[in-house]
Image (cartoon, rainbow, N blue to C red):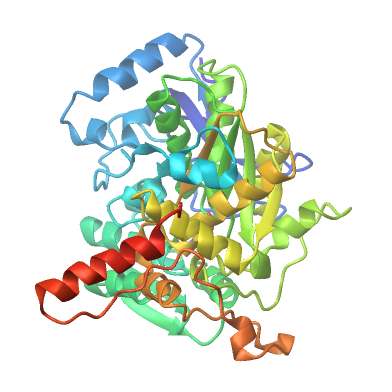
Length: 463
Ligand code: F0G
């Protein structure tokens, strides 16, 4: 039975939008084009209402059976779990077969963190190379339901690339706002190729976010940043996919990078709903790792305050998470506290080295993703995580998302941006602890054999 008329019918039962502020709790239908609560300005959640006869065993069995199906609704690692989504079962969807990302054993990274074992959920293996696709499939599907003409976002690069691709699939006009000169070339190349209107803004991501929210007041324009609850809905399904891949064994810890804090909010929501539905009996502890120069959420955790203080000039070479005023901090805070997790920050050097270690695993990721392994190393060293605990780190973007960074690290030409610190350029240079620069050789067999020998010698005893 559905509680009220406002709960619109979905595959599982019903759903509505609701203000996350318990003091307000205003409720809205799914087809109301909202980003924040019109009553109090709070963030909005989609709230699911399962039908009374929902059986967790049946859900697991249905999701398993769909793994053998070629129907696009089943092939998608998001829509496969459509019982968790706020859409009617027969909704026409915009999909690129997103999700379905691998869960890798990572012994090299585990040893680096002094863990007995570690698995990496590689969301960079999505169609456009980042986790954003899992939320974009639902957000752009909702854009079509709302009959939007134009979809827009502010972005540090990945949301933009993902939106550009899904908008192209849906034949929607797409405008993306990016901070000029502050996103990786690889991500920019994607958005250009997918045909989006790329608008480069003088300012940082937080400025872009502010402007785009003003733009989205226009009825024909639909904003798909993670402030949009339909983005979060798609992104939360990674919790179900991860647990299904683990035969529903709940990890002790799940660690994610934090920028605008949509991903941590989504994962937390996903685990919580699976627990409420009886598919799991406890929550994994969810921890968020930020880059030291862009860590307002980690600072909140270290303080007495319960309100996040934005950072005006965030700085990090991990441009994906160069964010000072994360929009979804309240949702992320709720998720982290409820699960008993924490938030912390890592230095540029720690992040760069962790990225190279993950690389030695044969698994490439972009710098922001490597905050997870760098953060885990700290959490194990400080005793927050025991070495025998069961840990999953979420890698959010692919190595090919930021090739400049990777090449510069290996050539020891990465410099931090903290020019105001009074440090010399040399002092700002990151050490290539695990660097692996290319060697120039003559076109002779002897020179190549010698090059190989030298490479072996230089890297013996490394991770
Ligand atoms: N990792 C990568 C690779 C990202 O691109 C982002 C965010 C994050 C982590 C942080 O996730 O914002 O949900 O906390 N990128 C956004 C963008 C901001 O515009 O592409 P979050």
